[in-house]
Image (cartoon, rainbow, N blue to C red; front, side, top):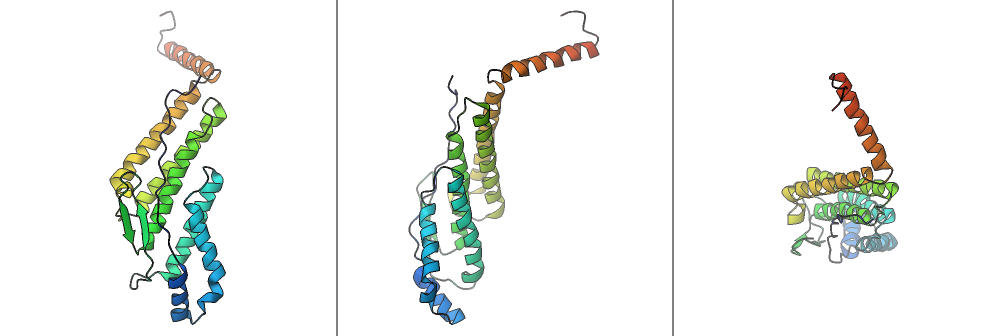
Length: 220
């Protein structure tokens, strides 16, 4: 018997290419008197990592890829980006619902968008779980709970994102929707053959116990 209610995954935000190479090399020369060409391999690895993040696999490996790049962004922000100085790198991300682009030099847009995509990817992982088994449903529940946790963290941490899909109101709605889907999976797990019979037996026992406690055990 197939699951009656399909899960609704979130789509990943799309982005334009970013060239870290020239701005980073100029910054290294200006601030550290280092020849940026000596760091070309590291810069290329970072750009390759970002490119791979645009099409992550729908798996824990895809989550790890996004999480790794997200961690790198925290280091980049502390070393290359300053509120008092623009480095000349523009980040462009498209709203996942409207397709409207947002372009900023603020690396917070990059970090928030990657975090959104981690949450979205968890919802996509949930849709791939086998929901006719107890283990598959538990995997879906876990993925949806993680998706909700990531998007809640995004709402609490990045409070001034200029994109509609990452506005506090939209994120609050998405978190509620995702948790509702996790609840649906829990109901499906209870309703599985075997588990359902056990659940009904426990429910009947609880009802009989309640009757005894209220003195109504002599019949219905």
